[in-house]
Image (tube, rainbow over all chains, first blue to last red; front, side, top):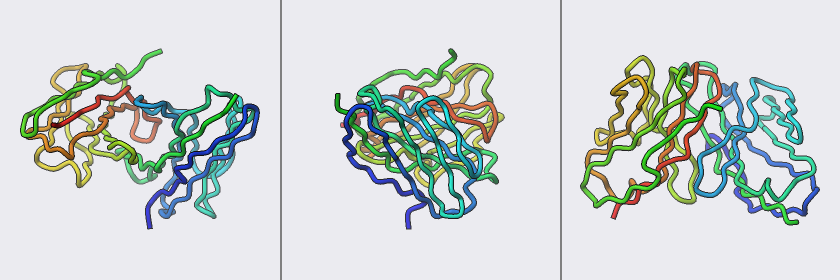
Length: 113
Length: 113
C-alpha cells in the first residue's frame, strides 16, 4: 500500500464550480498536512498547512483533515481558470525533526472558462 | 517576499559527467532539503540538511550524491557521475524549523544524455 495516494485526474470543471481534491494515507503517525499547487515545470507553491485534524480556511480554499479516516481534502470555491494546475498533497511525521515531506501523486485540475 | 532561488534553470549533461545544482535558501532558514520529480511522477525526498550535516537521506541518495553548504547562503547538490535515470526536476526547499512549512524553489531541470 502506498503511503500517500492521490487520484491523478485529470479533473475538468467549469469556472465557478466547487472543486474537491482528496488524498488518503496509510501511516497514522502523520501529523502535518499540506497542500501545494504546482504549475507546469515550476516548483510547488504552498497553499495550506494544517496540523492534526480539523478544518482550515483561507479565502476560497478550505483544507480538511480527518485522521480517523486517514483522509485529507482541499476544497476550492468559485474556481477560476487561474486555478488550473496540479495540486499536491504532502504530509510529515510529528516525530521527524527533519520535516521530510511525503507527497501524493498530484491531481491535475483544469478550470474551463 | 523572500523566496528560494535555484540555478541553473536547465542543465544538460552527458552521462558520467558531474553536475552541481545550486540553491539559495531563504536567509533566516535553518533546514534545507533537496527533492526530485521525474517527469510524470511524484515529488520524492532526497536529503535534509541541518547544522552543516545531513539529518536524513532517502535510499535514492546514494554515494553518487552529496550536499554542501559552502558559505552562509548557498546550498548545493552534487551528482558525481550522472546516469540517464537522474534526469528529473530537482527542487530545493527550506524552512525555519523542522516542522514548519517548506518553501520550494522553482527547480532545476536536469537532462542526462
